[in-house]
Image 1 (cartoon, rainbow, N blue to C red):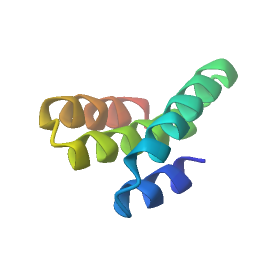
Image 2: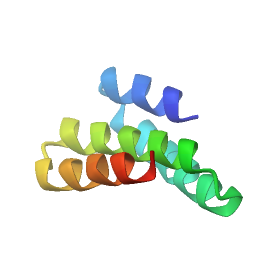
Image 3: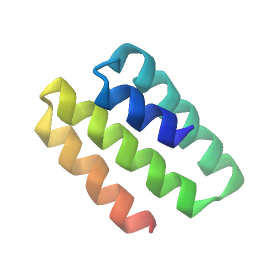
Length: 68
């Protein structure tokens, strides 16, 4: 799902990408899956970047590194 969210964000389909990232993050936390948590944070960072919210993009990118 994280890959799909990133692809959608790259296509500018942010309204579809953002809910996917939320689902990825929730599922990865529930499963205690740090790899998927990292990918979900990368995807959300990309969504925020495309939205022009660079502060949040940086925050989620940092979380991706921390989870890796």
